[in-house]
Image 1 (cartoon, one colour):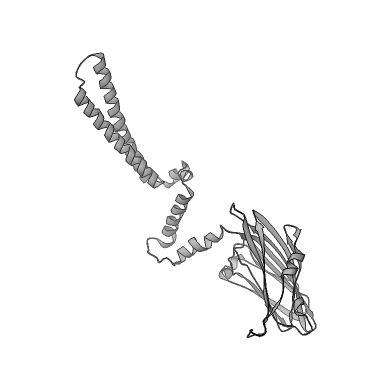
Image 2 (spheres, helix red, strand yellow):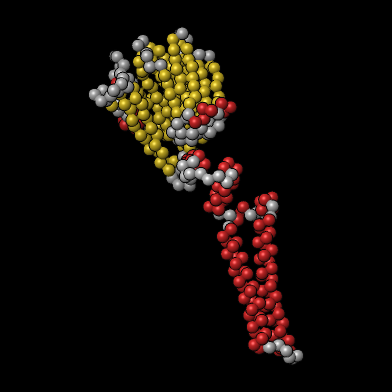
Length: 320
């Protein structure tokens, strides 16, 4: 916008000066000293041409000074921002952010300002969770713990282009005596925009036994990806059933993309166990956004505002 105004002002001033000199030149060469009708008409035309030149210069200077000293209220009120392109608005925003948060200090390219402006804010141009809800039912059964995990995710694509999102089914699990490895992690329900894709994902999920190379007990690896197209909005409902040894007392959940509303409910059926829960990640310090409620022998954790990829919660169960 400033470049356009500068260019237009320069052209107007040049045209104004040129008009004055042209009028003066023709007045001297041709002469307008006579009193006949033709001389009078020519003199009027040259004076008008000279007047246009003075008007262009005067108007340009007034507009330049007006723009320089015009109040912010007038700039906004009379549609200045509406005439800007997206790139110019972003440039103004960056300058305002620097003035507001960093004043005139110099900063390196890897500073906090650049991280948020170019890193975090750019995430919102990609798909994000409008809502992420999960309910975990925890059952103690002999030598193992069974968890039934119900998830509902609403994914929004803010761009105008078709996007393909990866829904990841991933876990590292321990072997359980008396339980087949294929039964440790099962997807019993997988719906994409009310379309049943359960059989499709069940065929893709194949537990891999990495006992030979694994250095700890978590040697059963689940790593399956399902790509789904998203034009505007996609609703995913799924139910996952997992079985872990009785000594595996922790459950962790985190988001992989920005999330506007996050809510996790963990239900512990056996009252001989105590349940506790904690939040973690960048938003851990935003305590005023944290939602935490006791639900009988269960616990609800969540956030009422935006959280970032990697933020989430962890639940722990311990015998009373």
